[in-house]
Image (tube, rainbow, N blue to C red; front, top):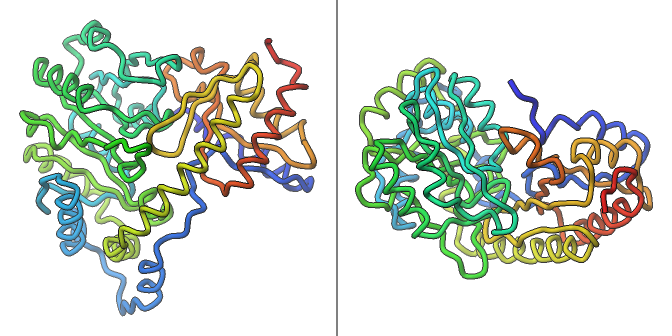
Length: 389
């Protein structure tokens, strides 16, 4: 199993804190946005005499409510097409274990969410990367690049939309190209859509579940973690209209008995969150994005495309090695007794080399903290021993 680039530097950040340094955590997508008030108040009032197992596919009332949520987003899904999982992570593991056999291949545009590597290892699946580039803002690679990678072992394509770690938001035409290649080669098209609520500058997120002709091919992954700032609830969902896939995934769901009861109740209450909550959150993230990305691009030698979704960015820095740099920031550097924790982008590629000069940053902190973090990085890059330009 590969180490998480998001969490592997935690011992160094803890050591920095023990020295009295302020550490700005831009390494992990843990928002400081408050969980909706309706969730917090109703969980306080929850009176369960027995914390029971739920059905393996989740509490019926929650699946019914979740189907209603998708309907409100013009995604035609029924409760029977939803399996509640222990986070989006378990949904991805179930999808991999259900749809692939050991030795099968899945094509994923890179850089991609680091844990996809781990899920693939668990399922014995080989990740075949197709490179996207910072110069295009990490847009979908040419469809010909996908075609060249397809073999008799290829069984699926996975995307994250909006993207982690890039923040790229796929257009409807890009998704239609993926639909066509999935149908042509009889592949599963999996989409991690957990950041659906976070689209900026008037952009509209498009779901693979709305693509025609994909009923047997499309598998959507979802989660409440980021939508409601409820990462610790550990509730996700596996959504598909393919009855055979859902039936097979149920065997894995039964093996782990059920998703967590308290998390499901919190998620059920979260469905009552008013639209004003999301409007305020999106407005806040746009301001945070602009502070971080615009600030980074004023630092000599830094390149950082402006994302249209999620709350991450990939920045290219004038450094020799992102793993060394991120550790050095925590271990050896401080500016006004402050430092920044980032995720080296080497862990977001199947081969670490393309990420050697890149870091992923999450703009999940308040605006003042982000401004301070930019200035810390500016100061650090002036004195880093491995600066390249």
